[in-house]
Image (cartoon, rainbow, N blue to C red; front, top):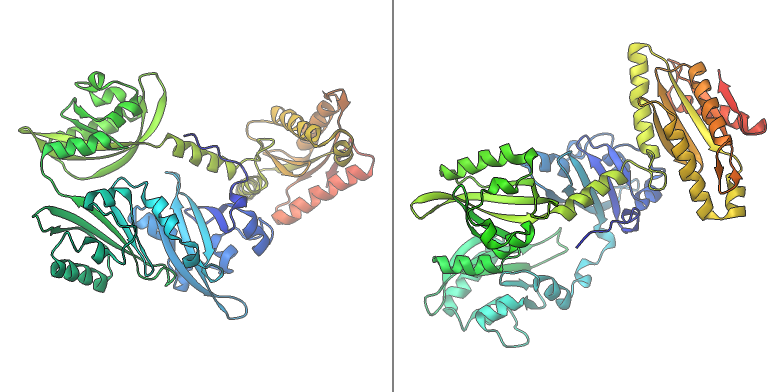
Length: 514
């Protein structure tokens, strides 16, 4: 299913949401944060915005999820922050952080735990709906009820509508005392345990995984149980593989086994994949990396490796997949074994998020945040190398009247057209962005005020002679050259004053701040 990401979806989330890079610089804040902490451009760091800290959270005794994710090569990390506000009242935030891409971009959500009643929101029906989608036998035990998914019910032939606990549900299947001691030891330890083995009354061996769920005492005594039957024959592997939603393969230089899911992902039939070299599926940009890993597997390297790679399907479509691979000894030789998951939709989602953090959705020009970032770098360059730097601020004349007369749809059309005219007539080294409403900023490095004035006159004249649906539009421009001693704010103020003067003098004109 394709993910159709609405540009404003992050603004609709009723929690604090930010996009942050590895240096804690904010690429995007949603409306909830802006409302709580002020204008989007006031505070550039995540810890400044949420807690008014002057330095990273770890310096204040709090876990920094971004540092932890980077240090441990994780894709996500959740923690709880306890901070005191200006009234010395302690607030608690669940900080949920996700690494979105290889470019070290992070999505971070701050959920105010004091405002939430999580337990009240968790219903038996909600949990049941979630775990029924899990392809393994799963149970979730709470202080009030226990829920089993269909796989679990089928495995142990549970036919009652409800059970009081995990113990009472499985007591008929296992030795009661052994089962009780087993469960008690796990709950007493209250630590996640995986792949624990226990035999039932018939000698069948089962693998148990136990995960206690607790978030700062919001979830209390919630337990997740995952159970699997342990078989060691090839038939079970094939049964599981044939029904798996993930692609599964076994290769010894050529595919010797592929499951239906891999056929669906690659668009090849099973008989077409068998004896095919896996490299034939791999995009040229990734062939060397995959070839190296394949050779390591055939030499017996069992080190688990998870990576993302692009493949080309039978129809020629390019897809992103996540591959998890290892090695097994199969029929007198080592073989590579792995799973393949189609992550094309996720990749598209990440690209849209990056675009969201960089570009204005209507005009496709840089947004205000990015144009400020660009200007800061150019100011530093101008100071360091003593080279000129100018900016042009353009404003569409009488834009409110245009909207009132012709409607907002026509107004959007005007913004798009003016944007394309401006963008088509600047140099590659220049940057242009939508400053807000009907205002645009052009940053012209290595350009003095006279060169910028000439460029402003050129685009003013081009716009004046551009007709949009039989309507002529004009713009006014302010021009300023950077002065070594001034701040960025003072620089903007001068060009804004020049634009104001151009408007005051009758519009459709260019004024220079000297």
